[in-house]
Amino acid sequence: MKSIFSQTITNALRQKHLQVLAAVLLVLFALVAFNSAVAFKAKMQSFEKARQSVRDAWLNQGPQNPHSSAHYGHYIFQPVDAMQFLDNGIRPFAGSILRLEAHAQNEAAFSPAQDKSELSRFGDMSFAWMLQVLMPLFIILLCFNAVTADRENQNLKLLSAQGISNANYLWGKIASLYAVVIGLSLAGLLTQLLTYQIFAKGAGSVAFTKVAAWFLAYAVYLFVLTGLSVLVSAWIKKSNASLVMQLATWVLLMIVMPKITASAGAALHPMEHKAAFNKVLREDREKGIDGHNPEDERSKKFMDSVVAHYKIDTATVKDVNAALPVNVDGLVMQADEEYANLVYDKHFKRIRENIVQQNSISKYASFINPYLAIRNTSMGISQSDFSSHLNLLGEAEQYRRYLIKNLNDKMAYGGSKTGDWDWKVDPKYWDTVKDFAYPAASLVQTLQANAVEVGALVFWLLLLVFGIVITSKKLTVL
Image (tube, rainbow, N blue to C red; front, side, top):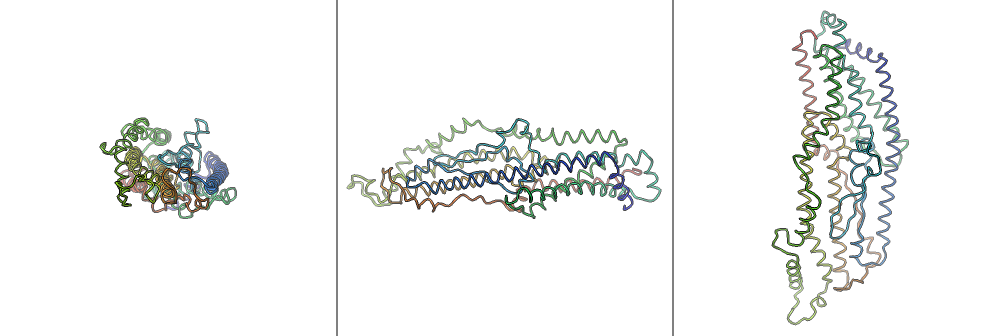
């Protein structure tokens, strides 16, 4: 096996076309690293500036009615994780600004991709994209004739006469060619990290454990592709036929199949139109979630419960609102918010479950296409997948509810009277409302969320080992 390893890696490194391709890849790695570092630092600075500006505006509102502040709203910006320097995922296409206000649960808007050309919608070039798409091309050109070349120049008979087994021959070929692939990929990773430290210093530290897990997933992916390419070369008799078959497979797996899975998800689990969605939201707000609890009846029941709670005798008191020790307007608004939250939870849960079902087609297709497995795993570890976007929306909604409740409670219990909409809070109050803080998912949580894709990578690894065993036994002379 050692002789096969050394001979194969020496021959590979001597090939001019592979030297040129490797040099091109290294140049692209450097260019992508520089572009990503500069863009990431600018994005991080923009995020921090916008976040601080919004927070300063909140703290410096001065004397103001809490409900006016609730309608003015608050803004949350898409947080930036240092891992997105390696894989930006869907971040350029997801909304980057979310407005939080009373009585409404808004969608994130203003995605960065809106300011780019149509070509950018096929994806930003990143180091992750290069490992996912370009490195497989390099692997094909490196490995397509790994066995067929030895067969065509009669080397296989010589190796067989020397007593080298098929298994040792295959493992030696795969190990040597994989050493070239992983060495080139590792050089690319070091280029990314070094460039990040130089040009994106101060933009946030990259967690070593996440980078290690991220690259380990790619190491498995590239090993699987290298091994499969060698096996195809073992089964196909001619080098040109092996090359054509592998290039056709690359087109199918990298270009055709991702579009098919996305279209299949949309066809099997279609989304309802926004107009229809808004209609059912409005009807549930007005008529009640069960259709038998209209808004005016809910308001009356709530007022009766408030009067009973504060033991107000309606038979002797002329102005119930004036007799109450609280501002009823604040209580009513909060009750309405809480009922609206039930409506939002019901319908947004349905929409998000539908999106998860759509994405599950791509998730389980990872067992057919390893590219889908590594793409989803990479985005998950980098916190740039759709699941992370949904988590952000969920955390933002929880903060919106905290914020609006705080404002309504201040209106109700802060010392104002019912109907006094000119009442204003002391400016010191704004500092008591905590700022939004997005809790990033841990590596363990990320891997659990992408358990299917991680399982698919392990499946492909086991399938490769099985393929090597079968190939070494079935082919008497490779």
